[in-house]
Image (tube, rainbow, N blue to C red):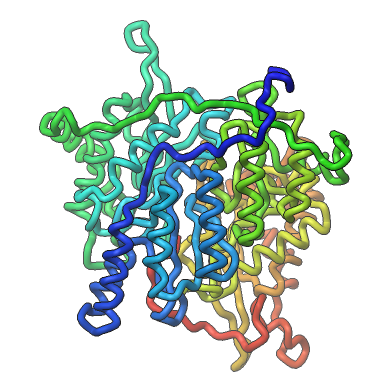
Amino acid sequence: MTISDLKQSPPDSVKSKINWGKVEEADNFAKTVKLFRQGKYDEDSFRRFRLQHGAYGTRMTSDYAMVRIKLPAGEIYPDQIEKISQLSEQYSIGSAHFSTRENIQLHWIILEDVSEIFRSLAEVGLTSREACGNSVRNVMCSPLSGVCPDEEFDSTPYALATARFFLRNPMAQNLPRKFKFNFTCCEKHGMVRMVDVGLIPQIRDVDGSPQRGFKIFLGGGLGNKSFVGHQLEDFTPEEDLLYTSIAVMRIFDRLGDRKNLARNRMRYLVNDMGWEKFQNLVLKERSVVRATQSVITQLDVDHTPNEIKRPIRISDESGSDTAPNGFARWLKTNTVKQTQSDYRSVFLTLEAGDITASQLYALADIIRNFSSEGKARSGFAQNIALRYVHEDDLPRLYSKLIEVGLAKSGALTMTAPIGCSGTTSCNLALTNSHRLAKEIQRKFLELKLDEDDDLSDSSIKISGCPNSCGQHGIATIGFFGGGGRVGKDMYANYQMSIGGRSDGDTMLGQTLLRVPAKRVIPVLLKIIEIFKENKKSDDTLKTWIHRVVNGNEDSEIKSIVEIKKILEPLITPPTIEEDPDFYLDYGSDSSYHTKTGKGECAA
């Protein structure tokens, strides 16, 4: 296709073919809030109702809520982004937050305004229904599904069909606990072994004909105690996808622990029962489901291909294609070549998932003008992917991103840490993990560590408490928050682990030591220094740490014990007189304390 073949007017917005919203739910929520305020609806019942509709409690107050907007398969369209921009200014704090589960969160919403947000979301086909609560949560799909060179087929239509089947489905409304699906493209992307049901697309030759199906993993999950999932069988044909999902959910519904909140995720059931027994139960239950379900009970998988139409190119004032300063660095650390020739997927770096209302509004136009599929995908690492960007348009896209403050490099490297919301809004948080992630990102970009190939495939993930909303257990270097004390003075502290990963060699990180919040950055830089001194020529930090934690390293660092000894002098706390700032958590000007409320699992 040549430029002369393209439309010579601004491209129309592509809009979602699926309307996830229901306006009547907004009306019902408004009525129920009134009853609650009048004392006609008890607090526990209202809490369950509120969570089922996607309104999460906010730290230490019942007058505000966080609204979690579901993006099934991570898909979001320009008109939806503009609506969220408008809502964030009108009802929230002028910004939105992209989570690790392909949701968008609006924080500090007055409870009475939540129904207005629901109504507005429904206007553009969005919903927050079952984004919280004991139901099927947002169905995730790798942002590279459909463009990944290593995938066997695009699993996006199956993720969307699964989301549509279980949304508002009676069988998914009162589970023992939340339930999560992750679809992906290949072994490298998608964390399929760390959720209740993880799925990798596969094609098998059956009697000389290719047959689509999935490699399915069950019983994984992150939390106060994390488990890696188990593969159900060698190959699950696509016609068994729904039967398998229903079977697993039925078993969890019947046998899951409804009394012990700390042990009622499916991963505990699998662990307590033993994998082989659970596996046999699933296979038997699937046979029953297959034999008894009506033929109309099936996934509505839309295989209509997306229209790929390169939009009109945007001219800058000079009409030049000259790449701005920093372009090469950004191109290297924020873009991925697609399997489709001449196209790249571009990942936008956010600070711990945050984006302002004005940036959202600008992003909608950027998608219209640069994405040939006309939509964006939310990522697994609090970022946004623009796919089908033509390589000729990348310099102009980078210029536009500079204009709106979305051109930070390092999106696909260690310099973009994950940080959960922490004490900025979560009842359970013990530390400001959100702000710490931003501080690390700013320091690492200042040091240009995103340009270091040795660090590109590593990750830093931070949770404000042990519950793993920041996915610390599968990070190359992970942290979860707690408190430390010198005499009567407290300070923010983190338990650090190393060696976690979520690819084909999925494993949980090993505990290393506790690190004060104000010593996290020096400790990280010291670990990088130790790695550089002991690495082999083809090592990355990720592969080197993997070798160390598995006891296979033959340098001076034989195990994590040697790393711990080197780091210990850095973590000795000073007295409050010697360093008053040490006793303040990031983002706080008052003394640190560990105050928590009733948790509602803001994963």
